[in-house]
Length: 101
Image 1 (spheres, rainbow, N blue to C red):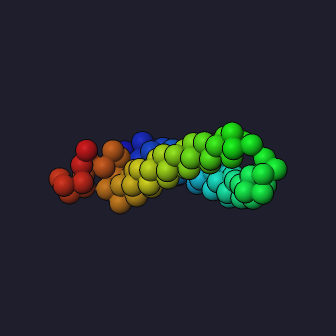
Image 2 (cartoon, rainbow, N blue to C red):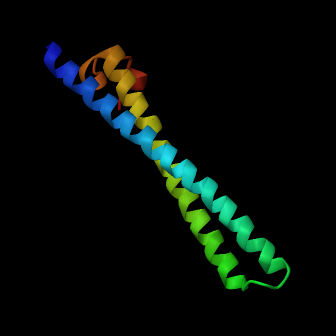
């Protein structure tokens, strides 16, 4: 009985750690894209850069923000799975009914 519970906890913890690392990477990427957008927009304002480049930077920034939001959602779901495994046992089957999937 304990072996499956330990395996589920270890798996959940591993997934949680991987998602946290992914979140850190995406957060850094968004920060870099914010800086790139500022760097592209200022030259555009003075006429030294094409508007198409500004739009490309905005598109990249928006896509990365969307990836970050999805990764955050996944990380929260993994955290919930992990804590359910720790607190309520294998598969969360012994938890309160309102928290069971």
